[in-house]
Amino acid sequence: MKLAVVEGDGIGKEVIPAAVEILDAFEMDIEKVPVELGYGKWERTGSAITDEDIETLKECDCVLFGAVTTPPDPNYKSVLLTIRKELDMYANIRPIRPLPSVKGIHERNDFNFIIVRENTEGLYSGIEEIGDEVSTTKRVITRKGAKRIADYACKLANNRMKKLTIVHKSNVMKSDKLFLDVCRETATDTGIVHRDELVDSFAYNLITSPWNYDVIVTTNLFGDILSDMSGALVGGLGLLPSANIGDKYAFFEPVHGSAPDIAGQNKANPLATILSLKMLLEWHGDIAEAAILEEAIDSALNMGICTPDLGGKYTTSEVGNIIAKYIRT
Ligand code: GGG
Figure 1 (tube, protein in one colour):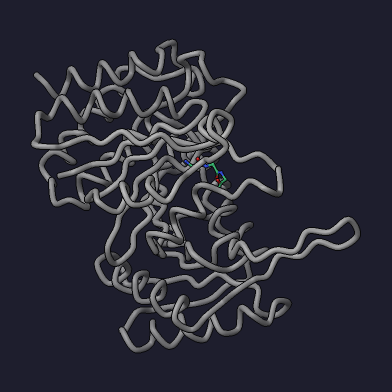
Figure 2 (cartoon, helix red, strand yellow; figure 1 turned 90 degrees about the vertical axis):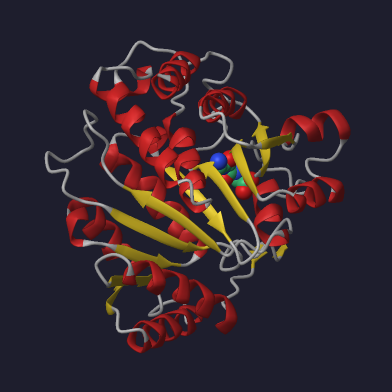
């Protein structure tokens, strides 16, 4: 495997080395290609990501990515949006599942759902007009975009409980009618039991009764917000992994950002990145390694080995180090 490794900014520079130490512990045949991207690179060179960087990412089988800082500067183009578009990674997969010994907001921990977020259009189309009096962002929904994410979600649902929830706001934003119709048709054609919910009441239902859901498909911005919110169900944003998948490329990253407030302190939770590494191993077909990694994570948590956000006293690098040691033995 040829793997691009991007630390990015802030705590990306701490959580990625922890995950890479774990990957190295498997002693697999992997060529790692470090790629510098992000705000730090922009400050240093005037470019956060270049055409050559995109080419390097495309030459690799997949990408392990930390986090980037995105300033509100209108001249700064989001690195993540650029990569997701250039590599046409249209499905953002965000599994939400409780981990052992970590409590979220509920006593019950019998839930396990996946948010399938459309990743290339919607309100993150990047088509914007910025003015002093009026600023606009164009919300793009295409039949092709809705169809491919609906296909992905239905395939996933077919391998799970065959239960799909389509989340939208088509009563107010008429562009969502196309998204809803295509998702409904696809689910019907593939024999998936489906229902749809308006995003506002859905947010309430998901946070109060997460055990009622299995696969959830939604548009870009809604998926972004709903998945961060779901962090509260499992004990925090530091525990949420994700995969960006297209027909050709795959990219794995923690849901969290660069957290400048705690950067450089070696206290960021590396588990979201380590769980993203587990998704990478599964995607690559290294099922045995992924299972061992899950066992190592569970064992660390059961022994209270965790960072301060989970009430622990261990540093980012210590958590990575202990999990890597478990794998080596
Ligand atoms: N690992 C996810 C991450 O770095 N998030 C930061 C983020 O969403 N930045 C906005 C962007 O670049 O699109």
